[in-house]
Image (cartoon, rainbow, N blue to C red):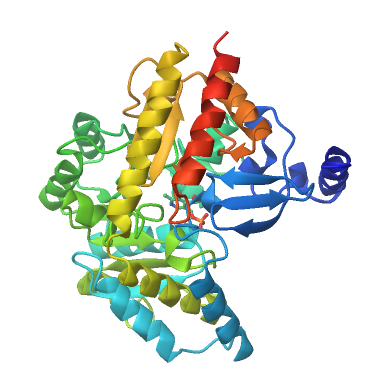
Amino acid sequence: MKGGTTLTRAWSERAAEVTPGGVHSPVRAFLAVGAAPIAIIEGLGATVTDSAGKTYIDWIGAWGPALLGHAHAGIQEAVIHAARRGLLFGLASPAEVDLAERLIARVPGADMARFMATGTEAAMTAVRLARVVTGRAGVIKFAGGYHGHADAFLASAGSGVATLRLSAAPGVTEGAIADTLIARLNDLDSVDRAFDQRRGEIAAILVEPVAGNMGCVPPETGFLAGLRERCDRHGAVLILDEIITGLRIARGGAAERYGVTADLSLLGKALGGGMPLAAVVGRREIMSRLAPSGPVYQAGTYAAHPLAIAAALATLDALDAEPQLYAELEARGARLERGLREAAASAGIPLQLQRVGSMWTAFFADRPVRSWDDAEQVDRERYAKFFRALLERGVLLPPSAFECAFLSRAHGDREIDATLAAARAAFAEIAS
Ligand code: PLP
């Protein structure tokens, strides 16, 4: 640790000179938790090591992609092997066909897939498709839901937008969000009101089936089925944004876990195993409207990047080799949840530990968080203190009260026990 702080300060000071806020994505700045940001030089399994040489148990998990842990051997080898054959050709490859076939086999109701580099692009593409197939403009999204940083989705967005308390979205014109209607998560009446407000004009509902960008908020019984029913009744397209949940909470994502079939689904994060890869998958009659088989334009120099496709195939190989993984993640997640609940209770701290499989959030609140208006009430200051107390003890939580923490295949008993020990000390410290 000799000179660690100095080193950290040195890079962050240099970064602040040459990069806005010193980071390339806002929540990496640690502003919301009042801590100096760390810069990572290495990640192995469930840990990351910063530029000062300190190693942390990592619960950020690259914000979702690291389902199998950092530096997973199978993914690494696949990427290195692919890189040896050249990085990018800008033409089709047999491997991407393999991946499309294997992916649609996992997602209920999906017949076709289109790959791109980021989740933002996937959300833009799906909404554009929905508008063309319905001939309508309106999109219902949920307060606190995040679907990337395209203009239309920044209205009442979660994730970094919420973390930095940016209520409006400067640079986004009124026109760009005029067709975005905001409903309340887990509140079907609010969805009905949105349909009523723009009768016959709603193209799609865009929803994170388990909200991950206001912290982890599970769907209540009947909520997703209610969205499906309303889309059918009104002739709208149901878009499940499974960028976080896909492959993570079940083999076939939230669609499988909750028994709801989307018209279009978005995948990303865990799919690429750390490489930039996202996908829109869905019903043939909608997907085939994409150019060049249809009129809806979508393209990308880095779409279906060979290294990302290789990483995704290796990810599916690893998941297929371990069908018990989801049960294991559930069991380990439950143990962590129990331990954190008990530790908070014995320190007299009100805590809502919300978890779906390997996604979880510690909300400092008296009652469960069901939607964004509940999330807004949580004690952010206490979260920031908890974050700092854990960081000091070598445990790295997301630097925001409104993000999910992620358990990976590499988080075993050792990492869970160490996290619980650090949490007990942290709760005692912040109780007063
Ligand atoms: N959708 C969800 C649910 C997300 O969590 C994210 C990113 O956090 C996105 C879309 C955007 O994905 P990307 O950051 O790859 O553009």
